[in-house]
Amino acid sequence: MTAPPDLIDPEETIDLLQELVRIESPYFEEDEIVAFVAEWLADNGLEPEFHPVSEPELTGYEGSNVVARLEGSDPNAPTLLLNAHVDTVRLVDGWEEDPLSGRLDDGKCYGQGACDMKGGLAAAMVAFRALSDADLRGDAIFTAVVDEEGPYGLGTNQLLRDGITDECDAAIVTEPGPVLARSDLENPALLLGARGRFLYDITVRGHAAHGSQPRKGTNAVVDAGKLAAALAELDVGTHPKLGAGSVCPLSIEGGGETLSVPEECRLLVDRHVVIGEEPEDVLEDARRIADGLDLDSEVEIGFRDAPASDVYYGPYLTDEDRPLVRSLESGTESVTGATPAIGYFSSVGDFNYLGHRAGLPTVIVGPDGENIHGAGEFVYTDEVVDVARILVAAATEFLG
Image (cartoon, rainbow, N blue to C red):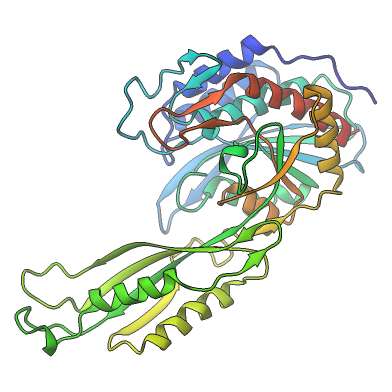
């Protein structure tokens, strides 16, 4: 099977990127950009559908992903998922220009979310349209998902809940890769795995007393501080490719009375894990540390509330010998003339749901940039175009 001619128009791709950047779309507020993506797909004859996303208990969130499908000629051929999120973090302070400008300068496009990940979204959109002109044996599914930046990744979680990922054999997520890799990388690069993440939600209960006589009470804030310091020194797992895990206390909240010993405190602690560290192991590690401190306070250790018990970011690894990886390597070489570097992601995202929960061979390949989540965020425009071309070349081979 032959690839379609190069249907990635650089100018049009960058224009689309700018349009996406100019739409404010923080997580939980994605209606406008969801409508834009769906309209663009429809205008290009790609028959998008709105895929409802609902989480009534913890967040009250109601929204929609956008899903489109290209049907191949052979029902026994593989199905490839192209996944990109439409949301961004909320606009941050510190911008010295309009954070939604989409300004182009010296090969860069500026704006909140330009790199994370409207560059990858634009690349996936134009690549999916180009694939509609290919003679594919397998199916290609495009998903533009909501709430990746939010607390639970509700958009991709809904894909799993509703069985959409059950139809797939592999996934590509167009997140920016090198800027968030565990080692120094430059594009072209393929990221083949990521650590996982848990969030300890710990309650420390002491005993109130008058603040002028603190020895008559048990200070929950003090004990929470001791526990936070001890957890920060926890021995964590390591993996030859994913590297070492990490522990980072995030917040201590408690007390507040004018002159009283705090009787209760809440401690939140981030824990990044590697393959082999299961949820019960992670909980037991924290309980062991707390028991070893012999605190006067009572300590209750759990994880943050989640929509369901399986909604967490597990670590995953995609083998370099997977057909998708080989297709991406050859596609990258045909587009850039270079062999892609291989790396691994330092944090978590929708790719964890796809690689760990859905069990799909999952590869991150996206345009790079700088200042992700911060003022001055930008994406390299030539890499947006390159990624689109790589997706077309790789998908054509993988689905052929």
